[in-house]
Length: 112
Image (cartoon, rainbow, N blue to C red):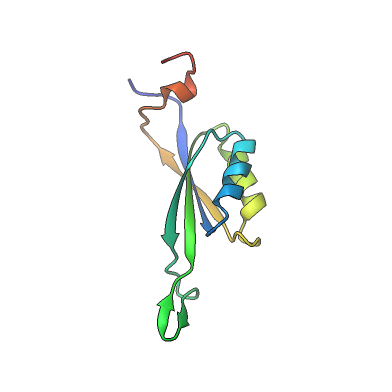
């Protein structure tokens, strides 16, 4: 039942409000979909205060499971549209995925 195709988890960390732009760019480069998670930054230089209360900038994590063939194009597309130098302020990295279950319909559409 193990899927032998090599996968990676693409992780994009973006300023809040830019996940739709990132996902659109990723889909145009071959991504089938992704997951968006709300988060807060805890970087030393990003903390701001408002009436003595610490406020941390809100971020979004975009998680995309990708095969090795489409990974570079997806990562380049995301960084092109919402990279660190843009208003999206994004960074992108990938992690190897050794085992995958439950996505056979994505890799073999004829299986039901």
